[in-house]
Length: 174
Ligand code: ACO
Image (cartoon, rainbow, N blue to C red; front, side, top):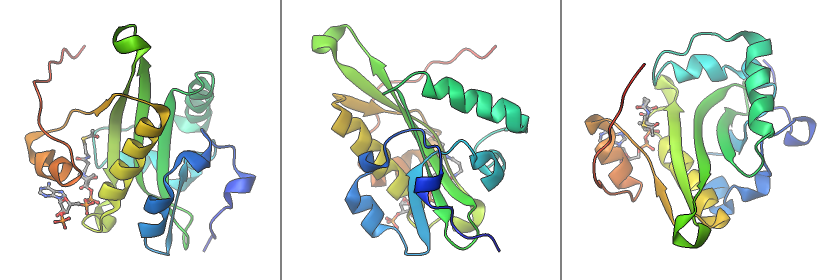
């Protein structure tokens, strides 16, 4: 069974110190929370996303090209993962990306996206910890609000995370 790869030997998407200490403390001891790493293709990041929506395999080269593209936009993409220390596989993931605005004194908004917890690990507060961590990052960066879209079914979950329903989502799929 592979063991947890230490953060020091990974190429990470952002500074791990941005993840709130409180969230790290409240995570079960067998789990580790950290920024997304360039090698997380090998830790089942893509299969995990299928609990959320279709996520066909982009292949290692495609995965790393996207990771590198995110890295070229510093201070913008904060994708984090929860990893099992026993298997070194990802069991939870989420992202907040930062939008810079001209209004509100050149304000910033945090957009939470793509929250997924593996089926066998759901109901253990990992989703809550991911939202707490992403909200903490967004607030530390100075966003005046943090927002997200979700299905009606997930509204009670986000209420438990301290979010409230506001306005409507509009979408046009291509
Ligand atoms: N309805 C009612 N309550 C819920 C629901 C739900 N669908 N989901 C969680 N909760 C409650 C839990 O009971 C818990 O309440 P408690 O504090 O009273 O015990 C609280 O919310 C926290 O729940 P967690 O255990 O942290 O939830 P979990 O780890 O299972 O993560 C998540 C929730 C992310 C929705 C997970 O079930 C999942 O991955 N689902 C499939 C993918 C998905 O729908 N992702 C969200 C898409 S929206 C977006 O990405 C912005």
